[in-house]
Image 1 (cartoon, rainbow, N blue to C red):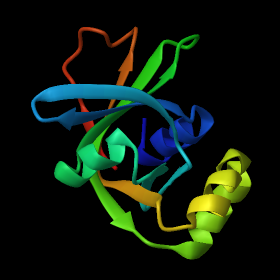
Image 2: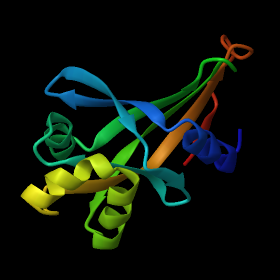
Image 3: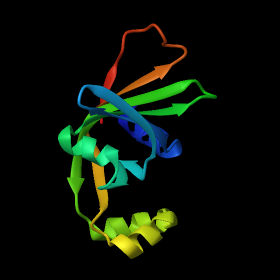
Length: 138
């Protein structure tokens, strides 16, 4: 896959497995991708979440996207970049209306937006199960 095909795959399969470290203990959870584009993979969380605390301590992550029927897995390893963008937070709220009561009571401050940048992707398929790994810059 090319970089563009990988980004499309991530957007087409936004439910991802997201791994961080807490001390020396790996932690993984499902997280929904906001979007993937040439700038990186965009995610949102809240500052009260364990995942946020883990990211603040160690910004290195790995995320996995899967198409089980096709037998394709894309794993991306990278470093997060945190940024404040009110317009983007408002856009995310329209995509995730379940956050509205939280924002109404807590304000926008606890909403955290970050992007995985400086990453490498590895595409696994059943056909190349035992082939040497090839990495693509994301």
